[in-house]
Structures are given as C-alpha cells and as structure tokens.
Length: 229
Ligand code: DC
Image (cartoon, rainbow, N blue to C red; front, side, top):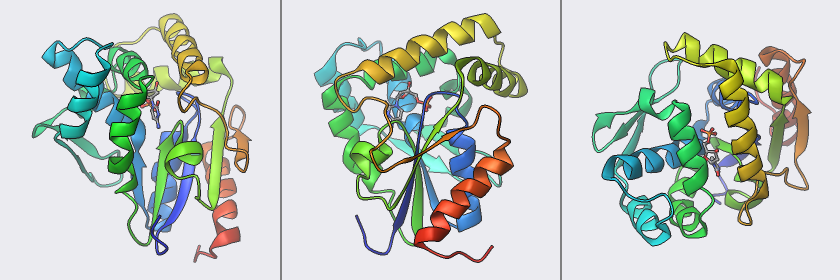
C-alpha cells in the first residue's frame, strides 16, 4: 500500500449504509472512493449480457481481467459507471444484478482477478474503500477499518426507499428475502467471507442517522490523521 495513501475501509452487509457513508467520508476528507461492489456488479452484468454461466469460474475470471470499466465522478451523487463505454449505472442497482454479483463474488479466481484493480484505486491523499472484504483481504494494513451493520428489516426498508427514489420498481417483502439470501451467501462463502476484521470498529447504524455515523467515522479517522473539519 502506498505510504502517501491513507486507506479507510468500510465493510458491511447490503443496505447497511456503507456506500453512503463511504461517499460522504471521501467527500469530507478529499479522498478517492472505491465502491468495490460496483466492480462485482459490472462483472455480473457483463456475464449476463454475454450469456456466460455464473458458474464458469475460469471464463468469469478472464472476463474480470479484461473488463472495460470506468468510473466517472458526477457532482455530489454516486459516480456514473461505464461498461464498454456505455453508462450502466442504473442497470447495476437492480436486485437481479446484485444477486448475480453475489454469486460471481463467491468464486476465488474472480476475487483474485479483481484484486490488483481494486488496489490500484489507492492514490494520494487517500482512499475510502467500501465492500465486504476491504479490511480483511484487499487492504489489511488500512489504519482505519469500519464495519457497518444494521438490522435486516431496517436494511430492506432503506434499500426499498433508495430503489423507489431511483424510479426502480421494488417490493419490500421480496427485497427482504433477497437481502437475507445474499447476506447468507456473502457470510458463508469460504473465500473472503463478510466479517469484521479483528481490528475493525463495528458500528450498528439501525438507530443512527447518517450524520451520526459520519461523525463517528470522522472521529476514527482523526485519531490517525487530524483533519481540518
Ligand atoms: O455492495 P453491493 O451490494 O454493491 O455488492 C454486490 C455483491 O458483490 C455483494 O452481494 C457481494 C459482492 N461483493 C463482494 O463479495 N466483495 C466486495 N468487496 C464487494 C461486493
């Protein structure tokens, strides 16, 4: 890890708010942001479009290595994501894509293929990386590690609201089942399972506002690097 790049990792289950926290943290700190889930989602989308089996580990790893993916900052919102030059940001947020991402993410060769790509996001002055294994596998040396959790029902409600706001049709019961299934797969896979790093600070955001979570996170960062606030 580059010495002049301070890494803050934010891991947690789907809908815990880690994406929102990572984006706001990166903004406040003037750091880069890696949404690693988007990489798995882009890979899943590319595989679905090519009709590649989600069990074809070697084929998926090859696809992952050659993936033409680009992130483009879009003001204060989430960055736009381009696959083969096409803006696929909206396609990535569907539950179909999330479920497929969770399946391809369970394959060890796929995870290895995406490792260097993720580490390359580390550039001065720093990086906020969110995902499932940022603190355990991708950036194990990161000085600040956060594991953000929340009750399943609350996470499903948040995801429902988020999808509705984006104009995507959603069903709360279906989302809850999908999230539970996805979490189970992410937690129980043998490679890089979703779990807090031993040196991570676990925050339960069920009854916390995003501002409270952000303040706690900034406090943790300021312990290793005092920031102008
Ligand atoms: O964070 P997300 O919902 O966009 O992630 C989509 C899927 O990708 C998730 O179910 C598990 C997988 N993933 C992973 O295995 N490791 C990461 N670092 C990020 C995401």
